[in-house]
Image (cartoon, helix red, strand yellow):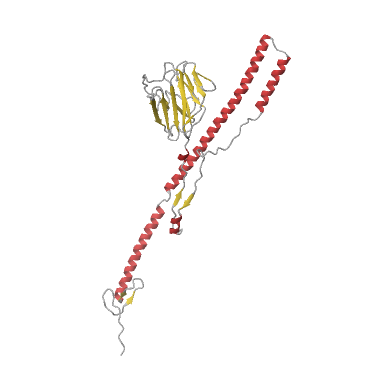
Length: 362
């Protein structure tokens, strides 16, 4: 006698008639409940589709990589600034060499001029003198027409080099995404802080000035030779944009008015008016740090005197300057706003009394 085949009951109503099995959940349903089951699956599909549409809209609205783009913009500006500063320093050095060559030619010309004038006044010259002066003039003309023996070389110092950047994708994330969605980028930036210059006693010299000044001893001494309405200003030859530098001064003579020591930026036109300029960075006295040198000045017995020595420190990496008055054993420092005083900087001293004399100690 044949045995009856057992039927699986419906998961919902536990009846055995007209039962079918779902291939997804592997549960059994009767005709009525299999229809309801399919309707439930359709509803779940609608929910997944809604989440899909919401996520697609979020992807279209979200801007990816904003911070990375900002990093690239910053690198671009920093690199441009480095190049501009290097170009400005090279121009200044070239102008200095050109001026030195011109000064040598002028000194030789002055010697010939004096000799000719003396010979003419005393009626004391011969054919030998005329021949010598002619030959000297010819030699000077050849020097003038000869190209300067100056080369432009590539400075491969790591402290001022411009490092290239690149974009790379994290390998593990790339394997996980299989290039099916936008990859996460890894931005490589080179940190230049490890390449800072060490503290150096900088061999600067005086060069340009505005007012009534005399520069002597190969640019190491600046002397005020008269009063000037806003003081007489003298500037250094070097340009500073990186590293930490110390410039040592001695006051050979100081009159009744205070001296000013600080910096100027090469973006400013000469002269700098330390008393009336809207922005200046430096000190009239060690306890009178100023940002705008047009306020009330306090005179104290801690002021600079004849024979005093001071050190001006330019810390370009930390955007600050420091003033050390050795006799009173006092140090003051001041942060510099690069928006107002961008690199490169030059040292600045202001002398206001006749006979004021400042010396750079190499």
